[in-house]
Length: 145
Image 1 (cartoon, rainbow, N blue to C red):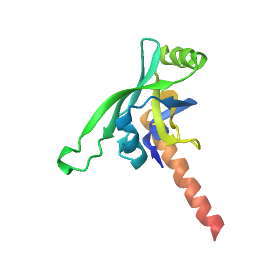
Image 2: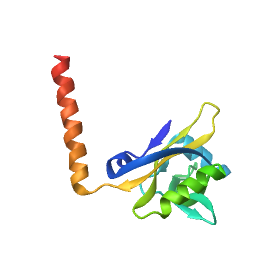
Image 3: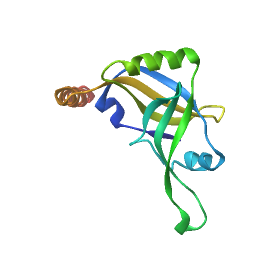
C-alpha cells in the first residue's frame, strides 16, 4: 500500500529524488497502513538543521465514528548528514522546493517517504507535459492496432 501525490511530477520539474525514513508515533502507524493519510498539502522544510515533512494529514482510526478526526503533524525525516547538507544547499537556491511524492512501506515493513527537490513549472511547461502525454497515448493506440 502506498500513498501517492500525483500532482508532484506535474507541478514540479524534479532534479533529484530522495527516499527517507519517517519518524512515526504509535498512533500514526495504523492509519498509515490503512491508507488514511494525505500528502497533497504536505511540504518539506528545514527546522534546526533537520528535514521535516509539515502538514502531513493523518486520519485517526477509532471504533467510535464520532471520534475520527484529521490532524496535521510535523514529521521528522531520517536522512544522512551528507544528504541533508545537499538538500539544504538546493533549498537555499532561489526557486527550489522539496515536494513529497509517495509514502510506502519497504520489504522490512518500515515506513519511507519518497520526495523530490526541484523547481516549480510554469503554465506553458505544464501544457507541454500534457501535449507529450496525449501524443504518447495516441502513438500507443496506433501501434496497438
